[in-house]
Amino acid sequence: MEKLRIALQKKGRLHDDSMALLKEAGIKFNTGSRTLVAQSSTFPIEVLFLRDDDIPQTIADGVADIGVVGENEVEEKDFKLTIAKRLGFSKCRLSLAIPKADEYKGLEYFEGKKIATSYPVILKKYFDKMNVNAEIHEIAGSVEIAPGIGLADGIFDIVSSGSTLVANRLKEVEVAMKSEALLVQAEGLSEGKKALIEELLFRINSVMAANS
Ligand code: PRP
Ligand code: ZN
Ligand code: MG
Image (cartoon, rainbow, N blue to C red; front, side, top):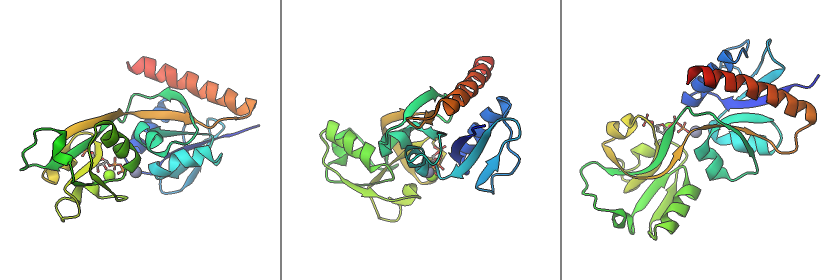
């Protein structure tokens, strides 16, 4: 019998919310999140624990069949994927933030400024749309410390509770996009795998209806 392979975030908010949803859907995994692959004893599914940034490509390459990933990563990476379900959790926004003490009157603030981000594609589209000429500086992580150490004038990053910004003396000044967790699937899956996804979606829909 066929088995589905699902890619989930290794650790972080998306990990916790995804595991909670699957558990409520009756899908349990028999290991902790320190192993990179885990089998379920209650559903024909195997999970790969990855960095969220790597999930879209893993599915597009056919290494995993489905996955849970933030809309922000899907938008940034632009692989051919099908959105099977908007999951409604891990909600956040992608925002521009600047030093708390700076005066902000509008987007012209960013003209000629250097902005650090892990989302250069989304930010470039946003600046182009808004007619802002700024320098985009791509960094993989710890984006929020960039202004404090003189690496950039501002940042473009995920904001959820806002506490990371506060801790780094930054303030959110523009929201470029809103994001939530998506269940995404590869294109061209076998009929057997599609049937398993149908069953998974049926269970997820039941959990979401019960929780709403
Ligand atoms: C994101 C973002 C900030 C933090 C903001 O990182 O990069 O570090 O969350 O959340 P807050 O507003 O609630 O403080 P996260 O660890 O979620 O994802 P990442 O590992 O992809 O950076
Ligand atoms: Zn990440
Ligand atoms: Mg982070």
